[in-house]
Image 1: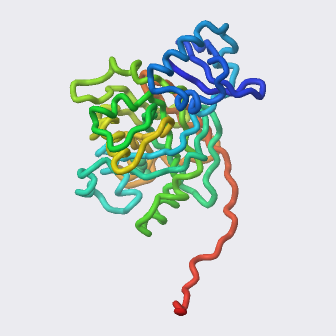
Image 2: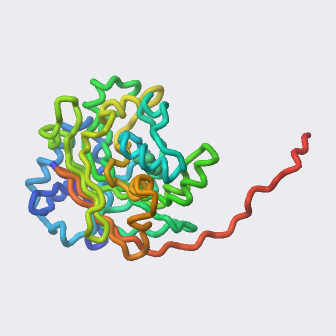
Length: 323
Ligand SMILES: NC(=O)N[C@@H](O)C(=O)O
């Protein structure tokens, strides 16, 4: 089942989306995050969705503004595609190869839940950046609370999947990561989620014998395909990522776990690293990035001019007086 959150005539609603784009509003639901939280995982959500199918369909998806399907309390973004690491490291860190530590565990960083935008919203250039990039990813959404999960348990805690674009200001990111913390301002202006939350049961037919979801991924800029990969090229499954995320802590309903950028053109920086030149060039206002994930859908966002940064001082070199 596919769930959308949308705005229509200043009202926010949650609906089940049929194949032809017909929307069946879920009675009383204004937030998919709340709907997920109020139940106990996938079965409850599917029951709410089945009840919605009895509601007369209004309006059609083409007549509404799609919002991010949910407002996640936390967003973890992993880095699970080896090919992406090989290419991007050269352009962001200036060195080639995959660090040995990458193979140890599915590393992630926490990114900004306030930055989530919908499937067709504009993306402002982050203040002070001249090197904007996209990242083609799939995000799993947690449906049930869990702590110290084993991968076998984690499957019951994933309620569904959505397309994720982790917009990245490569110049800011490259500079701030030299401090050995972050990324921070390089990654916190926009993160597309959408167009829908597709429930986990819908994607089971795509699962391969190693436990990966074999979904085709495509990225294009201004209508030209720049990247193509398979989600099954991840080096950890979403269940393993959820288990790692819950280690020594908790995952809660609505939490988002990004796969990390896919390989073979899942972002421009990977191509720059491989090609040794910025081709295709960094994104600029007017460019439209379209990401399609088989079985989930398409998001398409246009870059617009952002604000100039408010001036801030550089670090003060202090005299280090003591009390
Ligand atoms: N999460 C993810 O894949 N992104 C990073 O690797 C990156 O900034 O390229």
